[in-house]
Each structure stands twice: as C-alpha cells, then as structure tokens.
Amino acid sequence: MQKKIETVKTLLDALPFIKKFNGEKIVIKYGGSAQNSPELKEKFAQDILLLYLVGIRPIIVHGGGRRITELLDALKIDTQFIDGQRVTTKEVMRVVEMVLSGEINKEIVSLLNNYGAKAIGISGKDAHFMIAKPKDFDKFGLTGEIESINPDVINNLLHEKFVPVVAPIAAAEQLSHPGFNINADIAASELARSIGANKIIFLTDTPGVLDKEKELLSTLNRSRIDELKEDGTIHGGMVPKVDACLIAIEGGVEKAHIIDGRIEHSLLLELFTSEGVGTQIIH
Image (cartoon, rainbow, N blue to C red; front, side):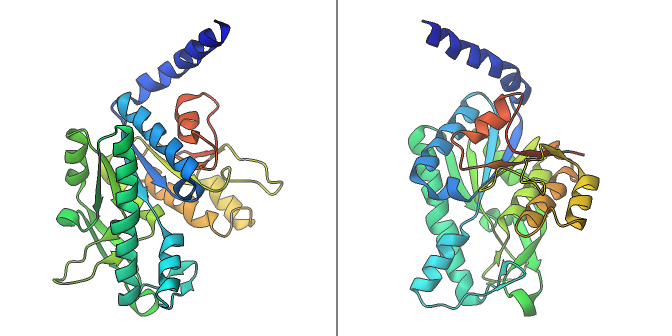
C-alpha cells in the first residue's frame, strides 16, 4: 500500500507542471543515443505519448548523421566534413533525403503511432514550409541555412491533434532543386521560434553543459555562455548546441534545455520535476 501511495504522490508532484504546460508547444530535438538505442527509443515514445495525453503539444525534429554516414560508406560515396559540418554534394543529398525522410522519419512516426500517439512525418519540402539557401555553396554544397518557415503548416497539424515529426530537409525557391540538408539543431531552433514554442529541448549524449571540473551548469544565459566560450569551457560540439539554444530564446522561446538523452525518461524528469535535469538556458 505504501508503494501505491508513493506513486500517487509522484503524480501529484507532477500536477503543477502538467497544468503549467497544458496546451503549450514544446519542440524536441531528438538525437544521439536516445535515437539509436532500442530501449531508449521505446522510453522516448512513452514520454511523447504521455506529453500528448496530458495536453502538451510536442513537435519532434530529428537528426540522423550516423546512419547517413553508414549508408554513404556502404555505397562507397565519399563524405567530407568541414568545421564539423557535412559537405553535401548532389550524390550525398540523395542519401541524406533517403535516410532522413525515408528511413528515420518513418521509423519514429511508426513507433509513436504504435504507442498510441497520432504522429505524422514531414520534411521542410512538404508544402514548402521550410525554405533555405546555400550556406556557402563552394564550401558546403547543398548544406543550407533557413531563410523562412511557414508556421501554419505545423500549427494546422497541431490543431488536428497530430504530433509532427520533422526531417531537417528544406526546399529551395528554384524549380527542380534537390533541396538542402539543414543542421537539425538549427532547424529545431528556427522552427521553435517561428511557431511560438514555450520550450525547446535538445536530447544529447552529455548531462548538459559542464564546467572545467566536469560539473553540471544548471542555468546559463547569453553573457555567461559568451564567457564560457571565451575561456574554452564551452567548446567543440557543445558550441553549436548552445548557439541553437540562443537562436530559440532570442526568438521568443521561454527556455531552452540541453539534457542527457541516455537517461530513461529524461524528458519527463526535465518537464515534470522541480529539480529538472541538464542545463537550462534563459534570457
């Protein structure tokens, strides 16, 4: 009986947060181990279903770099990175779209639907809701940066009670263009601010932003982030993550979070407990 009472207490502790976020849009960048481990995939689907059932409106943006590289290697197509970003030739772009839109997106959608969420998969090419231009064609090829997002496409899907699952591929203005490969973190941030999301959450393979002693920094703002970049505390792959967070919050998103997707139910721990997990970035 005591165990049952503790379960009820846990539910009651979550109640203020459920009330606070009811009806809110939350963008979730889904990547890392959470996207690759079979066990964590199922926990993620359960988390999204719970958010959906308590009236939160999740929007998922996913990456897929590891699987893109695996298929490129299998097809013996050369792939290169400059400054940590993939150079996207026309041949690479075909594989990027095949993996992101054709494989990973549909896998996530199918998983969510099997658990009972009403998910639908799209890319930025659908209804041309995400338009991009070359980041630097001579250097990066068809790697793009977003010029505009039509929020009506996502908002209409949310109105119809769908969970949108977005592959980060954008359309171009030109006819018969193969489209652009977009960094998934940036795509998630630009989408979050365009639709007026309350939060954006990045699932990563790190506990959050760490200091030089490898201790978690629970809350950061732009000035502190600038200091930590300057002294080298924030470096490497964490730089584009915090930059993506800043794009979101400076575009009107209330808070951005970088959390450890290797922890089971980290989404629920972040949203429904007072302590939360990971690093939150605020104005």
